[in-house]
Amino acid sequence: MWEIIQAAGWPIWPLILTSVIGVAIILERFWSLRKSQIIPEGLMVEINTMIKQNDIDSNKLEILKNSSPLGDLLSVAISKRKNSVEIIKSALDERVGIIIHNLERYLGVLVTIATVAPLLGLFGTIIGMVELFSSFTSSGHDVAVFARGISIALYNTAGGIVVAVPAMIAYRFFRSKIDNYLNEMEHEAIQIVELLKG
Image 1 (cartoon, rainbow, N blue to C red):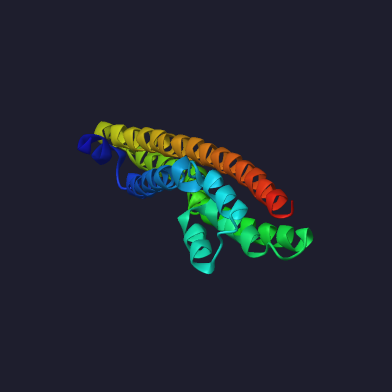
Image 2: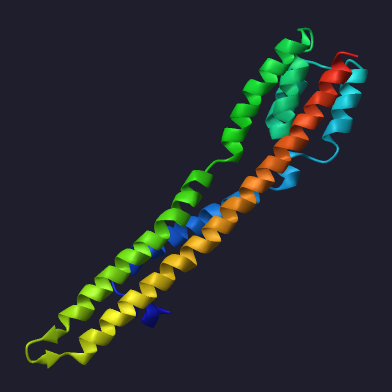
């Protein structure tokens, strides 16, 4: 591996840095966007029981709010239960915006990596081509410098693609996952509003 990095020259280092950041974000989002963290199993049954038994107080609402994004959303509906449906829905819409922002954390960086990595690879390709052409002199050409220029160009081009493709796939995967979670959470919120309002 070290031989490849040496053959790719100094332009590979920004790509290595972006790949490390990308992998860290992908691992963090895989951990944070687990379904058990976002929409815990059994939460709706627990809330239904709480509402039917009228067993609601500020402490339980605070615990519910901090339990998960779904708990956060439903705690808003329950805390506004004495207001009209329009006010509850307005409060839910506002909270959904905050939840979306939290769920999409770091995804902007991930899509930026997917966009920038090929450009960094292209930059390395240009550096390699410059080195390649510098091998030609009036007295002939230096084969070692020529070969080094080609290796810098090719390794950086490949490196840019290798970093960009997984980053873009991960971004699309997480976006789809978040959209599915939001649909499910909105469905659950509507059910709670209907239960609260009879």
